[in-house]
Image (cartoon, rainbow, N blue to C red; front, side):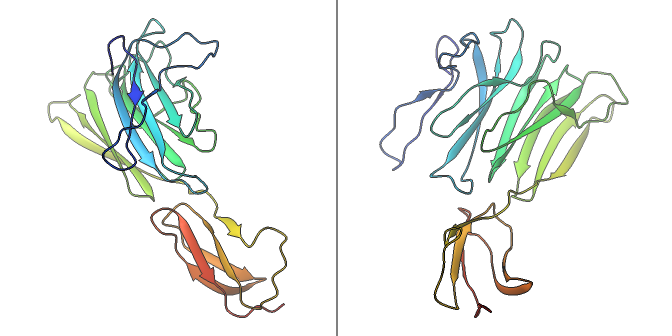
Length: 239
């Protein structure tokens, strides 16, 4: 965050030379007002299937609408900031995690509930004001605060401190991710292969198990690497 409230994303490909920073709070000429009061940025990165490189996901708080709101942005070549809470949310403590093509944002809302929202590439948008309450709603007392998140490729976990009662308990919520379908990059769709043994390769959200079939016959199995790349050489095909 710099003076004036903009949030910049910078990075280095070699760990030595820094690239030019990107102002992720710049709407790039859209009809929405420029953001200039952003703070508390949170960052997550992933290498989705079919992507040419690392994709960055950000969440932050911003007061430019005239009230505090949570914004998010996906930076993959281009980017666009989006508001994901409304004027009644009064959010704080945003957190973000990502794996594969999926990213997840959580925050404290109205100081008494934990809200959660998610987005999926390629568009990466989270519709405004569709956050889901994942904390207990039986008490309206203030005190559900400080959410944290973790992700393991299969599930996303949210943990928070709840002191709406004298015990001051800690809660955790687990949700299962929905992985994107595998994509075959070779052979090309519709290609004719002369050999009866074929090497099939593609991309997938890890840690899926990839199975290749010749009709109803299983002819190969593999798993993607950490970057989502996979390749399998089949057993002899029927045709």
